[in-house]
Length: 370
Image (cartoon, rainbow, N blue to C red; front, side, top):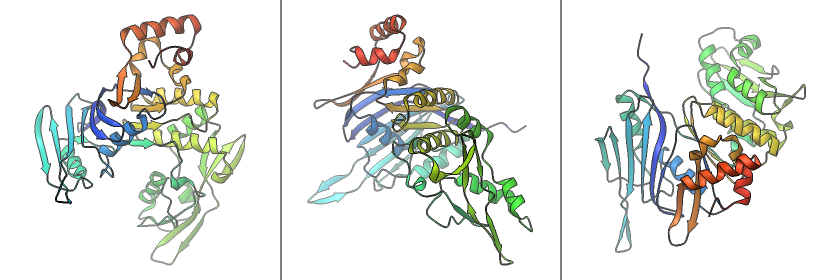
């Protein structure tokens, strides 16, 4: 039996210098769930943005310096560092940056002298692959629906190439799976398409448990055209079962669309790193508790880092899980800083929650953020 490749597991530590409100920041992160709390403007979203950017193909407005300490599922430590060394000389901007990758404290890649908006992350991924380490992109779920979800989620697929008919690729996994499964088949009909176009069971189960959507499918009202050389499948769109009725995307409420976006995005990747900005926005308080239960369940095999203003987010934690709370603060002198609860704060929070019953009340009515 072939041994399974190692995979990136989670981020252990992040060091950031010179990014928006962040002057000089260090913070340890845990496997599983991490909850960032703090006032508006404290820098929670900036932190999520720069961590996400560090795993992307480029920094649009990158930091001066960032170091991301990663661990694989087999315990291999990896350090990825980026430093922007650009200078201004005689009114001329000299673009220069370096990216280095160390594995088990051994430098294996050091790339220099390229524009800072063109980081060599693709090459870094190749190094991971050479080491037998699988890389999956860090997912960031923002507080606004992506533009791909602003339309009606209707797709057009041309066999042997993917053509959405409009700028919408949110359900790309399902579309690509369809192409893989029907490629090479002759006489493609509606039955064959619907048999091979489906949503995975874990997603359907999570939607049923944690949202008003009790089922999801693709509509059978599709059209197939063939000119003898290529076959196009048109009018592909998902339908959602709510209150025992099947309805299209446009019929969903804004809150239900938000829930689908969040649950679908988290379920997309196994053993991934997921960043979520304000999951409570547009969601009913009771539904938010269900979302937090979903995120905690998913954090068993993913690292999930959320930034929130909702005190109820803490109620998902047990008294032995207070290390998962990270307080974010901002001061003009130090910029954005982050810290875990002290031993005294944990003791105080547990005593309060034991007497009152909710960690959310402790956040609201105590000096937790002081």
